[in-house]
Length: 636
Ligand code: 0RA
Image 1 (cartoon, rainbow, N blue to C red):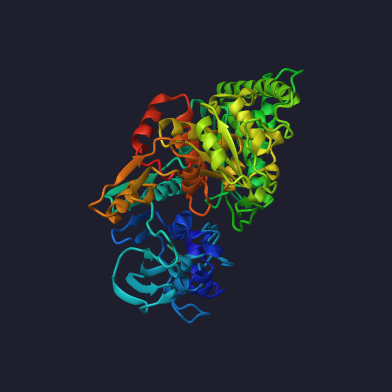
Image 2: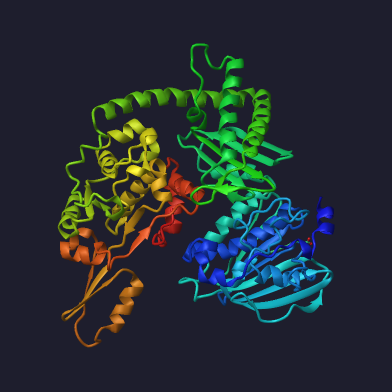
């Protein structure tokens, strides 16, 4: 296949669609946002192209380097971007790929890539459009070619600058500070993404080098997604071995790895052409139905389910399951709110048939593993029935009835959720200040007394029996479990406001765990925030400045009159502020700053929660030690 592609895939296959000015005018249309997440899309776009080369069997090494001058270099040993003259543009293919939108060679390119990911294919030219300087160097045909660009425009012609016996592409770009408020790329964000891509493309070596801070890391997984599942379960207690299935079908390639653990959570990550399909889609649907059907059928045939017992439900067979489902197909259709739901119906049947067949084979060949899986699922079924009974009692008692808002909630007068905010505040005294300081028109206050239950260790009936959690759930209005309905959310913004100390951090983590595990759409859709109270109050005469970071404190001190007396007050808790100060520094939308909690990486979130909230102590200690100083940018 590779040879054929080489012959038929030249400069002609690259289609031309539209100009790059559009990208600078409306960057959000192409990279989502221009915040730190959008900034990293520049890296993803080039890496995805290199990964495409690897998927085509043409590339085995990819290196991302964060240079000292703020630029980023992505180098691969693929075929190299073609340099021949492109039919329709009359320019070299290299120049076309870098300067013409959607000219990546992936659109309607017959005989080109079999599969391709990319940022749903926006193309390398988008990176050029949003960079103040880009340099492309291509090794191909025994020669080294080079071209320089700026903000989407060519600066130099394609020049031959040397001879080579290798092939590959090296692109160096400097994100444009006119387009991005923050242009500093983050080592850990890139490293996590590299790890994920390395798992999904077995055999490829992916390296990240940080020249700024002298760090580097290399990923290479011969086991592919099987290693991925082992990695996801590294802080969990696995049951049996990893099941791995893989098959090439006319519709595309299906690869699945799964393993049970004794936790209560399910963790299924699905990918289509290496793109994380957060919203699931057809491949997930096929996976779920095949899983349920196969387990039930094996259990029945082997008398592991009694005649009187009902079938295991889909929910039962997913409890404690970690799985990675990765499909590759020629023409992926991405649908849904965030374009991350696979719409190709043929992948439902493809995944269903591959999993049914090969999972049944696995169960038959490994009867001991099969027995352990089924006893875990049966336990989940019994617990589900018991928990439902308990939950029904709780709900019947009216505990979750939307009509009976908790007594300690000081609600806002607005009934318009889009304008309303809920502050969840640590402690009654800070709650009192917040109630007095707030704008009662749109700000509601819910004080929580003491610690909330750690939901990681409990099932829903116990969770709902906890008063603090019950009050939170009722105040939110969204229900829980099967009754969850995000449309009923009573506040657009839910703000966690805790003290800037260890207890405060703990309560915040407990609340985030609750939201992440039971109200994940609230996190995914950006409804959860963390208030940022100031660390210091600095005063000189009648002038008062609040500092939110050590940096701001140092800056403020410099700006004060050096001879006169300066008083610095360090805030240890919210309770040290009077209502007016709390409003001014932390709650007034005109002056406050808040962190919005995002699930950039659900996998990392899951592991952090496992680490912080799970039963395993050593990894938690290690996490706290390594991250104790960097808790500011909370990206769960
Ligand atoms: C268009 C066509 C071909 C490869 C590429 C683009 C390509 C793009 C990037 C971006 C980063 N690394 C890359 N490597 C390759 C096909 C080349 C051929 O048929 O020889």
